[in-house]
Image (cartoon, rainbow, N blue to C red; front, side):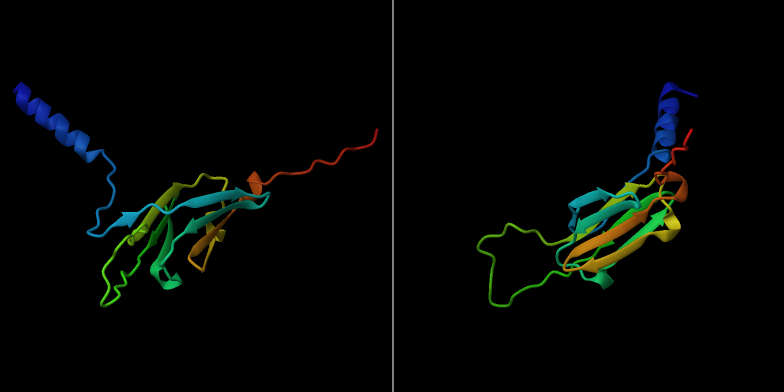
Length: 135
């Protein structure tokens, strides 16, 4: 095998081992999130302006929690943009979830453009109070 063929083979192997992002033919934004922690678990608040509850998908696969939202572009007939600060597009964000989260009890609710995801801690990860014995 020539040096050129060996290099080509290494390039092919490297390409097969790369995890790639999905491509879309629309503008996609990474939504801003707040992550809060309680004794019972984590809460993720994701800003998804323009997305309705039917436009949002939350999935958990291979310990990756994914948020996907589609936003329809609204046009106002007879108007043209004079100044725009807010971009309109879909949303996509993913988080790796560790074993301290009980994936079977994750809940998600959408209200006023904010997605609230509750990630309950597994029983083994919750803090425990140890009683002090007398004596």
